[in-house]
Image (cartoon, rainbow, N blue to C red; front, side, top):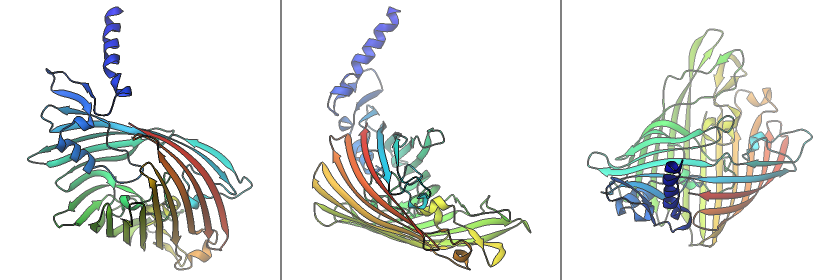
Length: 423
């Protein structure tokens, strides 16, 4: 037994500085090994630059890893990290039947308050970065949280990026992840465009202050079907384009477009039919002063339900056409939000946001579905305190409305608390 205990004790002693030392402490270094474990700040300048420059911009994406495995030449590094995030929520004056605050899921009935606690958004990631003559700066990245069925792993990102190319599963081109204000609510503004797709994308940054992106994405189509229709195989990918102008410090303006083709089958004739969908979007984030930062986004299109937070819960890219029993149709949809952030000091800031998602009627759809979702509204105010560089606390108030085509409205309120530790 002793021959096993001694190596274990040595490993524990070697790892002790990870919990009590500074981030730039060397954890493991052996002159005869090809790989060393070090704090990120001890890595080579190029590794640090690539690791930080390629960090995903969404508020709920993890930070750069605290420690990395690197070769002695400093050309390759593997970061392992993530965060533990726990929220406690109390709904009153109406409830939302979800851990996220989704106005589309405001419930009716006699229960008007509830308490929830959730740790399923805790995240783990692996990030390999490096530099060579063929690929230039490259990134291999994968991360997941625990929001799969039964709190199992659910993939959030898995891609390879090099020389402007992105191949894999990550944010789609019709989403501006860097233009979303911070919220304790994991989903965020109900009118925001938010989705991931398996894709082949190319980003060009050869012009000063500009960048351009084009992507071919795996389609996902959902619809309100009955015994007459099926939505299964798709025959065309989705196509997205965006142009972005960068200015000031962490400020930009983006214009984006989306084109998609949605296939369904009619059980009467069992022949596939197509409906064309499209979307246009404008988004921005800019810093007015060192204390004030603004956010905004507006998206409009036909059959873009999968891309807008609230509408994605309705599975309503395609819906039956009441005037033609053998056809489906794509409805016009709108999503927008405006948000603000005020920095009291480097470690304390406040955010506020108002958002709306709306579904329009066509061919008498509203009249045949009077209780169907017409629009939802989302108002948010939050405070965040970065206790340390790794630990953040947050508190938030949310109010939501859901209005049906018959103008009936349901309301809900939520108070949320967050504790998050990144590693």
